[in-house]
Image (cartoon, rainbow over the protein chains, first blue to last red):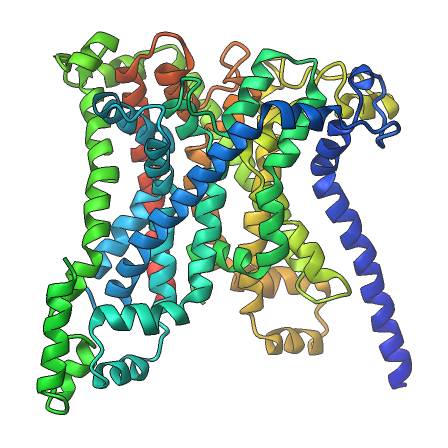
Length: 279
Length: 320
């Protein structure tokens, strides 16, 4: 009896696996197509119907990436890392103040942060542009880092606050009994416990800065500072014959997302839900 | 800046180790509210400098008549609400509003429906389920320029895979992003694809919070899968659904990149949404018109905030 039941349920989940594979394949088809086109020789790009597999794979698209895109990738990397530093440095102490030091007006601050996330980037971009024109920050890496950090800072504070609220008070009491200052407690007790939150916030801050298009296309309009998103955009505008090179750049630009998914998958899901639902 | 107050606390803690009254110990771990303020101060300064000030600047832009020269010299003429009136009375306004409504509405309905179906599908673990669920996050993590350019190439009229698929099943090719009839549909399709992961993740975590006993009881009553979904899953998931949809609304309203990269709002404004219109006025042409652009942008903020406040109210209620 029991064995047939187990057998039946196993067969049921087997079907689910197959169905799941089909759904995933459909969902990821555009990603596959990007990789496929990036490996297609230029002469085959306009072939109709297009080859479903890289029949004669070529690396000419990737050669173009190495020849032309390395500076852009470097700038995106710098902007992303700068954004991580700015975001964590601002958000972690603020989260500590709201969650554990019972900051006065902490509730109001939380509300402001939620509202801040709802302001369209295009409005912020115009404000930044108007300010940067005067300060001479247009087309600078610092200007981009500061603007891009506005995407991640509110999220970071909300995430740190949510996590740090769960830290047992006894731990902090103990640190205080040992004579540790609030700053010392923050550095040697709270931050080490919050390691995963730091990681989650850093990952998202990097990814959002790396992926940003609106700020880059408005605040870095000269050729001095061109992050990879703008570089792809310029590519699309300039020549529509080299789609293998465009797609190869797109593949390279997707590497951080892939790394994130492989090494930090559970933090990604945690990050998505932390912004929306508290459980 | 933080060292002075912290040292003082350290002292205070040493001087009065055990005397701290229980009540205050419960309220705050570390003495004075100034310390908390000191930790939050960098964020406060940041919010004023990089949120409040740009926002004020954008309101300022919208009530003046700025051109490039006035922009640098700062001597633009004050025009009150004239920019807002111009925008609302413009021929483009009804079209942009309608496009925004379609873009947001259709995107949300499909993202939610597909996300929910997948969440229900993934509810029970099966072999490879967690790996497949992780792979579903990919579209959400990719830079938008990557997704947008890939979709643009897939939807290319002559060499796109979608048209060659349509041809293989005997249908006529469609000029997806180059025809005014289908440009909006094209960006909506790409945007649905982008939004599915977000809906899946949140709805899936909502499903995890529905206790198994409820389902077991339903199974004992002999309820089928369809009935179980409509009688149990859907009603119990309603708070999470509302939050997902409202958040999706707020995010979708302000989307610029995917539309701009694929169609630039064209052809003939057929895929122009309010956010894209604002971007185009300010940065999309050789002649930046910041004043109308910020007027459109500020109208957009008002619309987003209406939904946003609904969302915050709901979330508050969820927490209590």
